Amino acid sequence: MPSIPAPRVPLRPSSPDKPPVLTVTGLAAAFTHRGRKVSALHGIDFTLPSGGSLGLVGASGSGKTTLMRAVVGLHPATGGTVTLDGTPLPASATRRTREHRRAIQLIPQNPLGTLNPSRTVGSAIRRPVTLHNRTPRAERDERVLELLDQVGLPADFASRYPLRTLRRPAATRLHRPGSRGRTRHPRVRPGDLRPRHRHRRSRHGPPRSTPG
Image 1: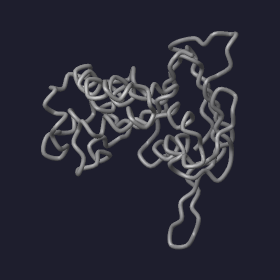
Image 2: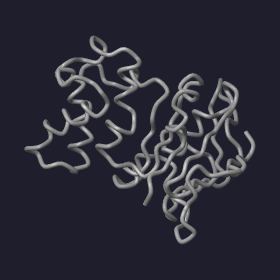
Image 3: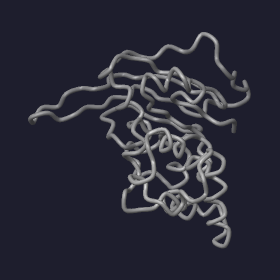
């Protein structure tokens, strides 16, 4: 996969006084297949301006999902660097600080598949609220209901289980910037979207940053 050229016309020009929020330099990744290492990414370079958006388009199997996962730290990079606000990040999410994990949050391609079927919808939303300690304990249940309302889901969904309640469109809402993302206030939101979603929801396209 070749280096990604800078967009001709940025959707939101970055401030000249601020450095890029995300810089990827020489990123490489591979898979192991039948004992052999197969290269999936090689020499990927791109820059995401603060408050801007960048769309990545490619054929199926070209490495888009692997790139998003490598940026987030869910797929081990074999080379290169991911820099957030001028700070190089460890390749693995498990070695990044909680602040770094909060700052880059993936919007998955299969939202329903990422929800734990043994947890209620409310529990799935409450978990990041609790882990990142952004809401007082007494207000967490109310915050869950607020987030459901913001994405147009009824309050009684909080007590339901995802596989019995949600179909793909409803599950997708939980991963929009208005729901679980807002529990963590991410700086960058890489979105791994299917082609039909890229067309209809291009304003949420991968990756996107919030003004800082």
